[in-house]
Amino acid sequence: MACKIYVEPFEAVPVMQQEEEHDLKKGDDLSLLRNLGNSDLRLSPIGIGAWALGGDGWHYSLGPQDDKDSIALIHSAVDFGVNWIDTAGVYGYGRAGRTIARALKSVSKRPYIFMKVGVRWHEDGSLYNSLRADSLIEEVELALRRWDIETLDLCQIHWPQPEREIEEGWETLARLREQGKIRWIGVSNFSVAQMKRVQNIAPITSLQPPYSALARNIEAQVLPFTQSNGIGVISYSPMCSGLLTGTLTAEAVNELPAEDARRRLVQFREPRLSRNLRLVELLCELGRSHNVSPGVIAVAWVLHNSAITGAIVGCRNQREMEEVAPALEFRLSQSEYEAIRSFHKSMRWILSSMRARLLDAWEMTQIPFNRQL
Image 1: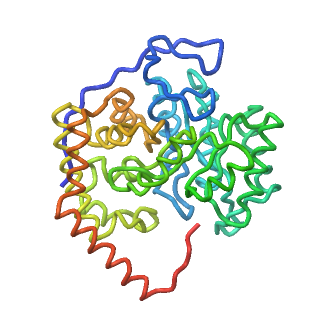
Image 2: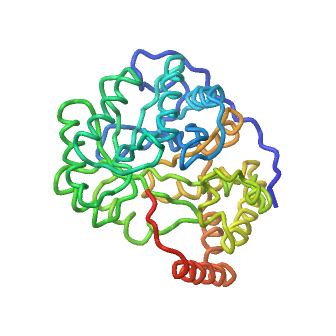
């Protein structure tokens, strides 16, 4: 069932215009900012993800989106102290980037802009991956013009695909950095082996992987590698695309529009869905004890891991930003963090996970395997 909780409004600090684009606002807490890997970027614990801002009409759409809501969201986030936005050229076939450009014209203080490259689209809307030099250069040049800037703060390879082009793509970003068009370079969705391949060409500033209380695969090998190599980690989907916010019931998930990409995610389908909603009940319980939403608890669980630099939160409007804003400061106690980890170790969780994996294996024998972009 959906979690209902009254959340005390989180007040934004009044914003004063600064001489430097990324200077701290009056009232900002220096202790909250985190250094990103080997860079000089100091990030707020959460950043805004622009996936949903792409709206409808593209393959990985999360449903309709009002551009006015997107702009208000960005303004609100900056006023709360969020100092970075993560986006990709492919979101909404460029719509998210155009909306960010509009928001930047009237934002109180310019945030860092992080961009992912390497996923393009054909005229018919079908997607393809390219890490060829000419393609990446075209993406970067377009972004610089769109946002009226001379240098991207961080540019990341979105997916390590095609595998044979990984080195060419990384060499291209390194060259663009030498030319002053990119300040820092990173990767997204890379394995340890793939990071080792590009690390021999140029240092990696950051990795962007999925990480949440429902997706912990990176804990075993990836996070130890990033920590030992000084690579920052900005994780995406800490609230599992809204599933951990406490606003979605099984019925609401079943009623998601056919074009909503979440309908294709395994965490939104049985038998995982019922198991996942039991975890949401625990997040709701912890949230009530602190007067914060379960989404804030979910983000705090991610940020509790010392290997995580920041978490990308996906909001659609100012109201959602206000609800998740306490995640800038709220932290779980060790006992609360362990309570969630203990839930993962329960026999009920383990058995439901085994059933889900067996079902996955069976489904793979029934249909042809088509790799998604």
